[in-house]
Length: 418
Image 1 (cartoon, helix red, strand yellow):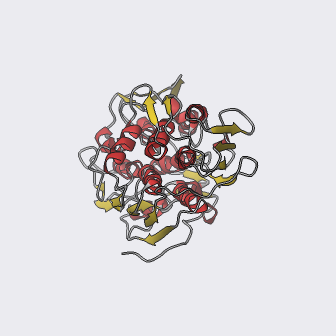
Image 2 (cartoon, one colour; image 1 turned 60 degrees about the vertical axis):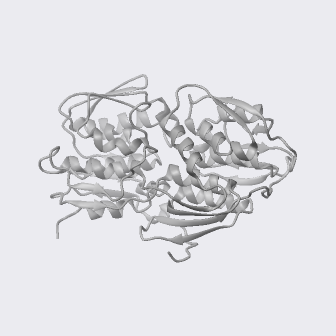
Image 3 (spheres, one colour; image 1 turned 120 degrees about the vertical axis):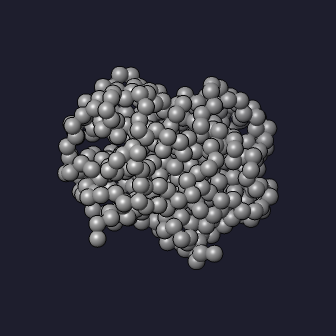
């Protein structure tokens, strides 16, 4: 068992303004440990909060997004104890769920303030959970970018279920006040939710459906992230017990991608990840199968967030590669489709953006100062390029704390020179 740990994660302001990535001289065989999945950790925290016994979460990620979720649960009266684990960015979480208890909450005139940062999973999952739990009214707010990210489909569904949702500035966006009068029964409703803007809306409702006794109808094809949610609902120990969180496949994609700099690639792939996920919960667990890159990759059918990792590798391919169905990337931590096109072009890549498709041609790349747009995945993706391209400088590298606080420590482990 680990030691009790109430300390913060590595802070973004502890990083320098810029980091230059020095190319590797060689890539020796290594097996890297990766922190727990952010997507699974935040889902597990909500399911634990809905439970009726003590839940122990092992291998959970301790990052900006999961601390936002943890602090929100503490604010509504759920005690969350945190213990260190061997992987520096992992924690063991211990908490007792609400069961039939009401959480702390406020009134419509004086709602309880809940800060969600720029965490999409925290914002969407908490909105549904706080309504289902019947504790009163809550005001959800975050950083400016979070206030630009869409919530409309979720807000419509919550209203269908009988809850109050009041956007302060623009309909369908945060800040917003949500909930119902404390203890008033709004349980047992039904709603229909789409997946066009984000699958997180449906996942949030499904995670708390039992707590709210809701009937949720899903529109459209089921996304990989909703399949993850449904799989977790089937196996999570609701009456108490232990649940292990698997390593984050999206974070692991950067280290599998680093193999592109190995002598003899693709026959030689010396870097691998400890305990690579064996379930099909994470769409990005299939990322190693996409090296070398195929002719086409879809964000909806093939990969999740690791499609960004594949995109930055595409200029190094020996043929053009087309990336389709990228619409959801536009409404995440930054407008990722245009950001990837701009920054790859800055490095000398030929990139065509047509609708929600990027076509990337084989290109001779050079170093550049990379804008990260306060987006953790932009910083990590272009770091991979810097392992082989001289002169790559990552601006605002501290944004990696959102999902992978010790990312640059892991990158340093790849250097085999003594």
